[in-house]
Length: 538
Image (cartoon, rainbow, N blue to C red; front, side, top):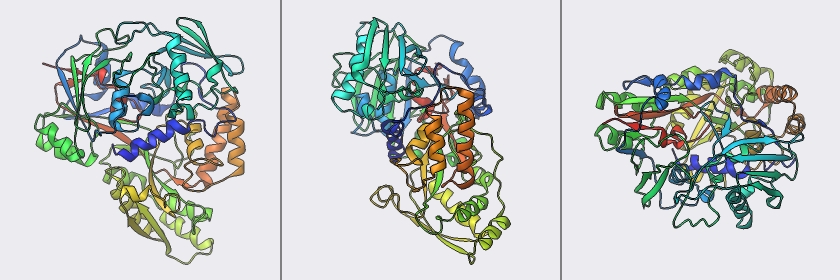
């Protein structure tokens, strides 16, 4: 996964509820989703190496197998932080997930569940929340207590660490200890987003005397060695409260890119390639027929952003016409080698409130007619700016150029490097391709499209949408909130600024010795970086 992609995840943590100073919205108790997409996430696919559907079920079937599991990652960095609150890189997130625990997490169903917290429950108006901790110990054997949780939160605010910026509704002085395992949060204002806001690895709980130079956590592994930018080595925590770990040692090894990582798997240098380009699957099968692929749908997407302050996208007719130009299935088949699902121009398919609107299909003739009716002379000239922020980005951009040519557009693809793309010009491009997702509906809106959203690269501002958003994030009744969300996503569908053509699959390649893969569809990173669930056969 690219470094920029990881920074986008950091942005999510920093601005979660930044625009929710009005109040937030999500589940108010540990939840399940009845959406078909969430159910589909468990039905992962596999090739050449066994049944991925069975792999997820294997987790409770056998005892620990021991050994050393070698995981390839593109890539580690000398900036990988051992303080989870300051993680910004893939390696930093790997460290956070192995050494520490958050109170909650996005689970295999794509919705939040308790992790270090046994329960998280709201009061009648969601301005008071009670957290009960499960029995867990730090790596030094001392118990995790409510005092540690309070100290972690106060540290974020006192030291002005990134988690504090994503919790505007938390008053650190309003956190009260009830007993050793119970505490209450008296929030600055009611919000039912509270449990979901605690899922980021940046929100990991640390001991009261935490020292990043000697990171002690409650997670499934302890840190044995750190060779920055090259290798991380972990030892199993035999007293971990949760599942696993099932290996004695975990090594995470850095590779420059997905190709070198895939080659390392083929030659037996690693046991698992964390996330590979879908076009390399056939190469891997030819090089290493015994290797397997574990793939599952996610809420991540490479989405085209149409800047409504730039011509011609200030006209909703042009935005709708370009949406009709896109052949979404062809993108899945030819860019992603079949590893993806259809998008419908709005985000968050694993949010239980995701709306089931009619699937938009390609219709180039209707697109041309829409442009002509709006007074445009064909072809309509558009400049597309893109960078290789994901392995598939250039190919996806080239695809829309070809598809749109048949629908009355003449698109010029301006390729730039990643640093340039996210530089001073970001947010000024008429049309661009961005990496987004792994967020709930309100989180995504807060980051990208409501008034004053910090990463509103499209400059879209719809007062009706904003009014619905304000009402929805303060509505505690789920059925009433669902109606508001459907109206919000209908507006995005009809006049919004994004083309969300597909949702990408996570693809993990592995040797036949590895089992225990579990899908984490709403969590960035392969398997949600939950390497404690993996087993290694002798």
